[in-house]
Image 1 (cartoon, one colour):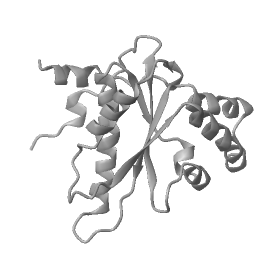
Image 2 (image 1 turned 180 degrees about the vertical axis):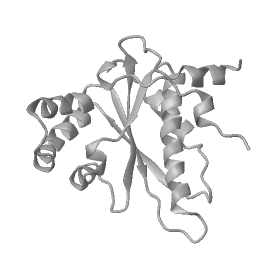
Image 3 (image 1 turned 180 degrees about the horizontal axis):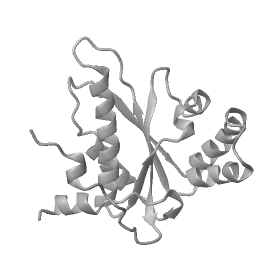
Image 4 (image 1 turned 120 degrees about the vertical axis):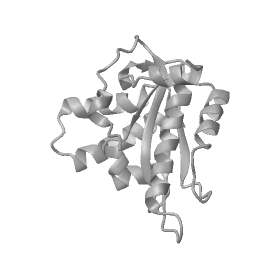
Length: 187
């Protein structure tokens, strides 16, 4: 079996608290982003961009999001609120893939959004290829305008994924996958 197929068959999504140091180096981050920029992009619109969040910036953003969480989610328990900064700030690297799909006379917005999703998956696979774990999530903050403003997103931009990257602290267990017979139709 080609190495690329084996790589894709062994990819897992570690829990975010299980991602610790070390994280990717600056050169490895550039590799991740170079790979992700090669996704299908009908019309060469580049309907996505990347926001690299590392170091103290992660902690500052996590702290700034807490008052927003409390205000917009009054049902959140203190335990949930207490976990939020650690979830975002403790893994070595977060790459936000920002979708910037917009109306176009020939390229449907849906195709632009799918391209941003492909960029997310490419970051995840490239991280795995480099020996790191990656977890692609969105979460409440990806849909909150106050949080998006703190990240510097323009109106119309959306978070396609917050990809948490680090070294898994433990071996990742396989989870059940759907049998092909339940998800494949042949005609």
